[in-house]
Image 1 (cartoon, each protein chain N blue to C red):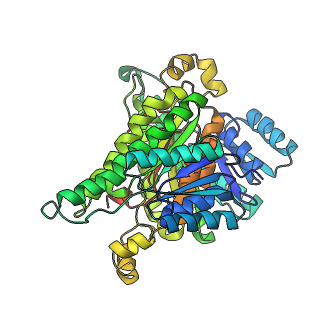
Image 2: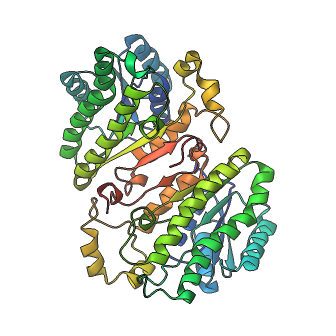
Image 3: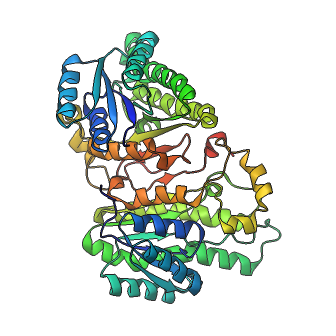
Length: 243
Length: 254
C-alpha cells in the first residue's frame, strides 16, 4: 500500500473510515468523500495527526456530475488514484407496502447510481493510468432474503452485478473490481440502531464484524496480491451466510 | 513491518511442488514455520531446503496423505517437533483420470477420492483436537474452478473438488464455536508442472488462456497470496467461504 492513493466514499464514518485508517497505517494516501462535512473534518483530522496525506471532499453522491467532480479533485490532489473504495451507502428497513417512490429513488440513488458514477469516473482515470483496484461493499442481503430489506437488498444485488460487469470490461486494462459482502458490522450507527445484539447472536463465530475485519478484506482486494481475483465476491460474515 | 504469520506453525500437504511449494515459501517469508508434507520424500525435502535457504524453519514429512494412519502420524510428528499446529493447508491433490464417465475406472476413481477427499478429512481430523483446545486455528482447503462450473472431462476431479467445498462449509459451521476458521481457495488455471503434464504444451495452454477474462493463467504465487490471507489473522472473521481466484472465469460462466 506504500505510496498508493485511494478514494474512499463514505470515508468519514463506520466501515469507510476503518478502511481509510488501515490504508493509512499501511502507507497509502487517502481522499475521503462523505456527505457529512462535520464527520469529514473530524476523520481527516484524526488521520492527519497520524502523519497521513489526506484530502477531505464533502459531496453528495447521488448525481453523476458530483461524482466526477469529486473524483477529479482527488485525482488532482494525488496525481494518480490507484484504489477506489465504494463504501458509501444507506440502510433502511421497511415492509414492502410502506416503501415510497422517493425512498426507492433515494436507496438506488446512493447505493447504485452513486456507486456506478464513482466507478465510471475511476474507470476512465484508471484506464488512462494503466490500471487500478476497485472494491465495492455489497451485503449478505444481496444474497439472501431478510424481512423488511426489499429495496436495500435490491440495491446491494445491483452492486454485485455491477462488480462483475466492470470487472469483465476492466480486466484487459488491469482494472480489478471485486465485492465484499459483510453481515452485521459493529459500526457506531449499528450499535445505536439496537438490532446488533440479536443479529450478532446468529453469527457462528459468535460476534458481529468489527469495521476492521472488513478493512482487512478490503486491503487484500485492493492490493496487487489479489490480481488473479476478478469480479469475485468475498463474504466477511463470521459464517453467518455460507453459500 | 509485520509479516502476518510470525510464530505460526503450518502443515501444508502436497507441498513438494507447484502451488503447495509456493504456499510454503510465501508463508515462511511471512514468518510461519512450515511442515512440508508430500508423498515424494525428495520433493518434500527440496521444499524444506528452499524454506531454510530463505531463512525459515521447515520440516519435511514424507508419506501418503491418503493413508489415514500415515497422515495422522506425520501431523503428530510436526506437533512433537513444533509444539502445535496453527494452520493446515489441505493442498495435496491429484488430477485424476481426466476422462469421461465411461472411461472412469474403479481404481482411478478410488485413488482420486482417496487423495483429494479422504486425505483432506483425515489431515483435518489430526489437527482439530489441538486447535479446539487452543480455541483457534485456520484451515485452508484447495478446491477448483471446476467444482463451481463443471467441466466436460474429469468427473472424478470435479466431484472431489466439489466435495472440498462441502467439507469446507460443514467444517466452518462445526468448528466455529472454537474460533477455527475454515475456507477454500478455488483456483482457475495455474502454471504448474502438474498442469503442463495434464493440460498440454505451453502453446496449447496459451490458447486456453485467451478464454479467461484476464487473458492469462495464474502463477502459483498468486494463489499463495490468497491462501496466506486466509491463514492470517487478517481474515479472522471469514469462515466457510471460497476465494475464487480464477482471473474472472466464473463471472462469464466458464
